[in-house]
Image (tube, rainbow, N blue to C red; front, side):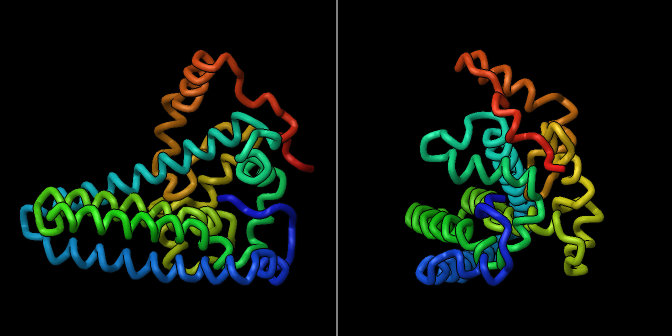
Amino acid sequence: MVHLRGTKTASQSASESSVGARALYRVGIVGCLISGFVLLGRIIAALDFWRVLPAAAALIAGVALADLITGVVHWACDSWGSEKTRWLGSNLIYSFREHHHKPKAMLDHDWVDVNGGAAIAAFLGFLGFDYLIVGAGLASAGSGVVIASFFLGLVTTSAIANQLHYWAHTRDVPRVVAFLQRRELILSRTQHAGHHRAPHMRGYCISTGWLNRPLDAIGFWRALEVGVGRLTGTHPRKDQEAHRVAP
């Protein structure tokens, strides 16, 4: 979850983005919803008995990949670079690390700000995929159904990752969300709390959280750090101050 700097009231946060940006966020959200449902409808229309299991497996694989992607991005921003890193430092890296100090600050942002940016990216992804899959004549083919199911799981989960992370910091959530969290079908408060305990070196996946336990158990992140270190000659988490828990 990438949040804006500082702690503000909801109204201040809502006005933080320009009117034009918030209008664009809303277009992205609506477009993402419509495109997602259109793709889902095409998948359902093309399903037959023999395609149900492959399509379901592909959908789950897409969700899992989205969880992994959030983890890799989160790990990279927590472990490498600093606020001074060109292009990414002052916003992306800063936001992830500041979140360790002020985990509740993200709750000061409204629904549009939380989800708008990801929705725009997802909307563009849906449009591009729809053009490619229909243009290639795969919309009703068996392979097309499986590919589309995978893409739907990947993009939809990526689009709502910020919201899932947001709910993992919120006590008062809708009942259906609480149900999904209790069964760890999406990121739960309990699971995510592990990441917010110093030194913040586990539990990086912040959408469904499905991969947190297995990746932590096999030492995936530490092994990845060793590999990156050997390739680049650098060491992770040089800026330890960014990882210190605020009192």
